[in-house]
Image 1 (tube, rainbow, N blue to C red):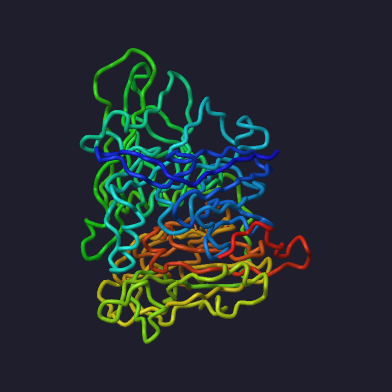
Image 2: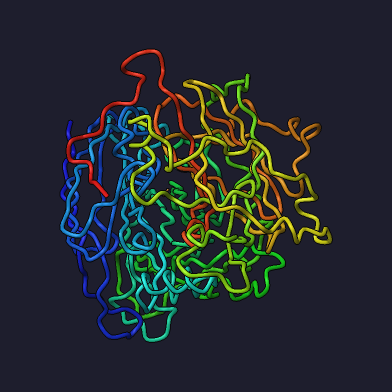
Length: 556
Ligand code: C2O
């Protein structure tokens, strides 16, 4: 079947947190935007019309885009942005994947308000789930809200080199909830549940920069999927979710939950993983976003029960949750690796050198500017043509180079607090791709470092899922750590939260020709260059080769 939508990216006038009405950019006047529901094997067609004053694109986060690399959406990687007044039709199949994914704008700051859910059901409908069919499903989209133009905040960050201020609120389905002063009742999302029914939550972290702890008072969860990949049922009283990730979980009432008329808070708080940053407690605002879970029945005036949330820096709880997830059924993990990469993911500084055009918009202060990098390469996107068009037209000159390094320029003690790493903070601005032969198996060790600060970066790969073979703290040891690999039933994801001051090892098969972005899903870090791009070469047949661009592909 064909699932067809029109997305008008335009203005929405909205008032939150007792502020005057503000104009934000949103799809079809909704925050979050419309939910797309498809069945496995369907074709999704979205006519995107840009009625906003900004350049925009839509990315279908987690969709494989097999044979449709032109529909992936990241600006300047697979397409030029859609200019104000322009339009573009995204067309892709949802084949070979089921579960909760989402969509968001992929032209810088816009995704703060241009986002929504994308749900893929099994072909047979809900009765084909590999777990008991829930009576109902609820979409829970987590976000961040600023009482200011996110565009201005981002421009300011790029010009000053200082990260944008923390969000004014965390939101659930677009609403901050009444833990914030003067948040009116209509700014709290309400989930209405019925006695003796089962509910599955489809939880999406669409926040720009904040990993979140998620709880519901007097309830626990059974996790059944993450990033649209089924997991072995995993029981937990808290869900941990980083920007870019999704979790499907049954909501399980504790004994004694008042199933008639009971009211409970659903709440999120940030997980602040930064260790040794200058002011770690100010990276995120330590406030609580909430919604209300209310069981039908006698009307009560009692306030909802509050959950006990973890501490904002509870890394042990994060690690327990993330390292306990396994795939529902044994995976076919490729055992032979063709390309080994060891890649540092860090914050740092950049020396701009004589060529100021390689810097952020403004000249840097004191000759350096805040940057972030992978293997000391700090990504800047091309300006005049997309990388995929350059690849298709076989004309990479001036657009990108094929020398993304497989290893960092220097081996050092990545995570020790005491090591002298001052010189390593300086990165190079560049547009480098890693070229992969068709069908090759890639293993990446993603190593966090202590440059500037240790921090858990949610690393997202476009176009593919990967197996998360292992993750741990400290420096990866290539002699002893492979013994920790789960090669039987590792979780499959599209976004891995690399442990703070630690590492994660991922493996995937590069079987889809195109240009595939890999980047930190903190918008702030992406702006500062924490990303790289894979160029996957053509296979032997026409079906396994890059197709020509659609005729309405936007031009720069
Ligand atoms: Cu959801 Cu490139 O990102």
